Length: 124
Image: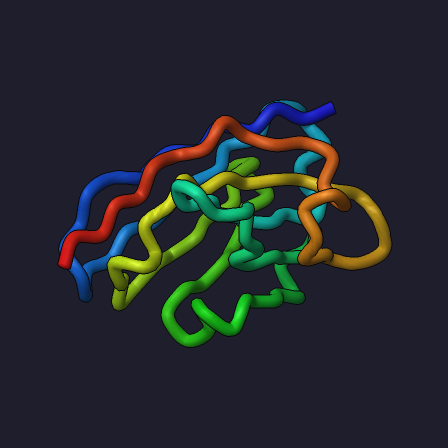
């Protein structure tokens, strides 16, 4: 089992940057693929990005490709989401999630463990 805690959210102007962190408990973090999702008020949860256990494979939603970068540091049990060129439509609660399996995934129901989320608000 792994517990996840996100941090790094906040209020930023359009065009700005934020880096989210997802700290994991336990000694098995390196065996999990990690994902970031977001949910805006009144909208369904949306896939943002995913990274495999080693950090050698990543996958992004089209809406963030070229602006966001997912990474991980297995020695620190932490995954990151670097968000650049932020837009007001990026405003949402961002959550990290962990899953085991052969590959990374973009579907939320394929992830076993979730953090509580961190709010990102982008003002115009």
